[in-house]
Structures are given as structure tokens and as C-alpha cells.
Image (cartoon, rainbow over all chains, first blue to last red; front, side, top):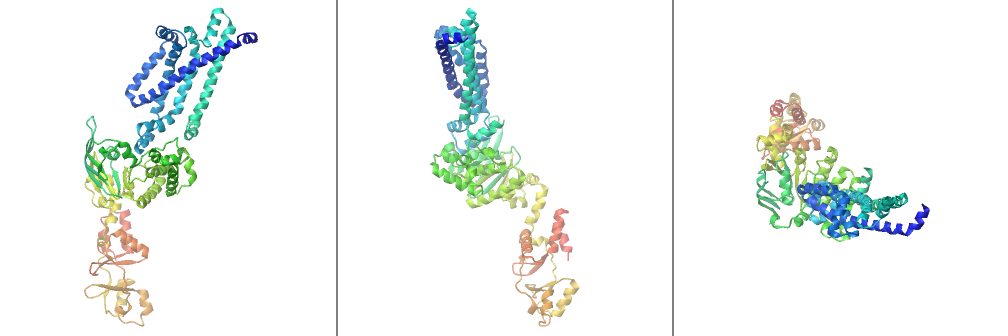
Length: 214
Length: 384
């Protein structure tokens, strides 16, 4: 094992970086799209239900198939991998944003409106901070899933730790499989923990006590 | 200050929440809207700051039609306190209090000063400014909710059952505190409630609504005295109407019309024997036209019986009396506070008409508790 590590050390670092990079790009895109979309959906609750179940259907398409679908459109490499993973990140973030914003106490919203907040101020000053713990939970869930699924990127030439795993499968070398799996797991754990720290930083002081109590 | 002119609120499904509402509210008035749920009282209030838009008619605030104003600006100029308090859980008490100031982009030191000023109004220590709403009790939270509405000193404040969610004791003290505050600050208050006791306690004017229409709009006294119809009576409740009765009973209705009197220039000896015969310890002195001149009691007789021969020399001329049409509750108050045994009742020209004694009051209390209040007149006549 040590022998293997010393021989492939360099390769392992590069693949881990690739893996991290693909996942991160996808998740950032997901946040940029899904959070505003979730807030928008909370303004039209009638339409929101249908829209979210439609995204849910997209999610049920096997990930391998999605990756394959993107080959004719975007070719092979990192870009189609990132785009495909981005679609998978959407649902948890979107749903949590929608539920989080919907769940903000109506009386608080009414008070804000009655005080003279416009829509923008209502979102920035009340709805986002108050739903942040729920939104962050969606982002964390998405991130952990995505780091797992990013191994599939290797199928369409996206690189990442998936390369080790598939090589190991093809060549029947368990050491390679382990070398792909363990760093991916560690990556997922680190990402989850870091996001927990971020969440704690971003959660407004006033919510922390009541939140921890739950 | 605030005027409703033929205001209607109709919803798309055909329900009419408010029907042809006309009402004028003066500056500094405390107006309670009251009625069963679904009577349109909250809708009426929310139309003022355009949380709900008027379908037909106009609402004028300070003479200006609210539909011509930007709703966001309008709301910032009107204080608003809601039922479930609605403090921002993620903001400190200070940030909550000066929220409207923040929206109006007040400088930091101005907000700071205002928050300190306001917190003093409700006698809460300054360290609360940096706490969060969930660290406060319900009563304290609603105090902050009220302060928040006062922050930018709006002349008009809307309150939607603000004390409804509090326990009775806290509610009571907050009501008193708030009424005091309102008098000091001279604000116009629109207060929605379903609690008649609250309305009677706080309001200068009560607006009773049913299915979108005003049934009666008047002062609490006037509503208790002359309920517009059965609905109002029922809404007030039988108990309150009986309780309300002494409030509007005049002295004339309950006084004893045959006080024991002596004419001026009556010899003292004769007066004393009259006292003994009628078993009273004091006498009212009147002249031949029955004009009240004074009084004396048995103690004064004891002290001076050797020096005087006629009642005029003995009597105390400085006698406290009340008019026939003065309210009973005020008279009771005076009797109790001055520790008097009785008070003579006179007409405009000081003619003696009757007397209210402590025994009359005892009878009245008896009737209020056990009787239905209608017997009290007969009872007090039989007395003495």
C-alpha cells in the first residue's frame, strides 16, 4: 500500500484536485441558480409545487445516462461533467430554499411589510437570514452527494478520483479502487464539516440559541 | 386625521368584507374597532396602511388620499403593531426597535439615541438592547413591538389585537401602561380587538362592526347607556349592561326624597326632639322656600347647647351638596373619599330635593350583586 502511495503520490494529488474542482464548480453553479429560483418560487406557491416535482423527475434519470446525454451537446471533458452534476445539485438546494423561505413565520413577514419594507428588503433583511439554516442544510446535502457522484465524471473524460476506481475495476487492482474511494470520502467529510462552520458563521446570532435547542 | 368615505372591500369570489364604511377619526383619539370574527374590523384596519387595497371609496390620512401614495412610504409613516408581536428573531432588541429608522436610512447615533429613549418609556433596563427577542418574556416582547411602532414618531398607529396573546395579568398591566403612554404622546390609535372589556377600558370611541358594516360608533359611556340595537346589547352582554347601569344612574334616581329637615329659626330644643323622634344624628336646615341653608349634627348640639337657642346659630353653613342630575358613580366617589355619612341633593336654585346616604349606597350594592338593578329605586324610597 505504502509502495503504491509513493509511486502514485503525484497522480493521487492531481486526481483529488480535479475531483474537488468539478464538485465545487457544480455546487457553486447550483447555489447561484437554485437559491434565487427557490425564492422566486416562494412568490408563486401554486406553480412551485409542479416545478419542483418536474426537477424531481430530472433527478430520477440515472446519472450515467445524464452524462451520456451531454456528450453530443457538450462533448467530453470537464465541462459536460460539471453541467451534469450541476443538475443534480439543483433539487436539494431548490427544495430547501423554497421550504425555508415558505417556513419563515408569517407574522414576521407581515410585520416587516407593515413597517414599510419593500420586496427586496424583505428578502435580504428577513427571509434569507431566517431561512438560512434550512438552505444551508440543502447545500450540505447536495455537496456530499455531488462529491460521490463526481466519480462518474471519469466516464466522459472529466477526470477526478473516478479514474482510479474505474482503472481498478478494469484491471482488478483493489489498491486502485481504495486509492479512489478513500480520498473521495475524506473530501466529502471535510466539505461537510467546512460547510457546517460556514453555516454557523452565517446563522444570525439571535437564531443560534433557539436553533441549537431543537 | 383619518377619514373613510364610502369604503368597500370586495373579493373576487364575491364576498364583501367591508360595506359602505363612513367614519371620521380625530387627532389624538383612541378608537377601538370591535366585532365578532369576520366582521371586517381587521380588513378595515389593514386598508389604512394598504396591506389590503380598497375596492371602492377613499381613505384619507391627514386629508391625503392613500391610494395616491407609495404604499412603502405610507407604511413607514404609520406605526403598526400586530397580534403575534412579529419581532425579527434574528435582530437584537435595538435593531428591532429602530427597524423603520434603518429602512429610512437614519444615521447610527440617531438610532442609538432613539432606542435608549424608547426603552426608558417602558421602564426596561438598557442591557435589553443587545438581547434577542427569544430571551424576553411575552409581555416584554410586546412592549418592544409597541416601541417599534413608535420609533419614528408616527402620528397614527394601527394595532391589531396587540395584547390578545398575553396572559390576563400581563395584558392588564400592558393596557394600563399603553393607555398612559398614548395620553402622554398624543397619538391617534386605531385598535382592533374582540375583547369588549379591553375596548371599554382603552377607547375614546368604540366602533362596533358586524358583517362589514358599522353598527354603532360612539363613546364607551354612550354605547353602554344607549346600545343601538339588540346586536350591540348582546355583544356587550347582560352583565356589562347591569354593571354599566350605576355608571349612568343619576343621583335623582336613587336618592331618598324625604330627608329630615328643620326650618330656619326653629328653637334648638324642638330640633333635638325631632332628632330623637326620627332617630337621626344630624339635621338639614332649610328656609321656608325649602332652600338648603346648612346642617348640624348631634355632636355640635352637645358642644353648644348651652350657648345657642335657635338652629341658625348652631348650623354649619358650608354644606357640600350635589345636583340632581350628577352621576351616581361620581357622587359615590365623593362620599367615600370625603368620608361623609350623607350628601344632600339640591336643584339649580339650591332647593333641597333629597339625600343620598351610605345606607342608600349599601342598598345599591346589594341590588347590583343580587337584584337586577330595577328594584333599586323603590328600595331607596322605602328606606329611612
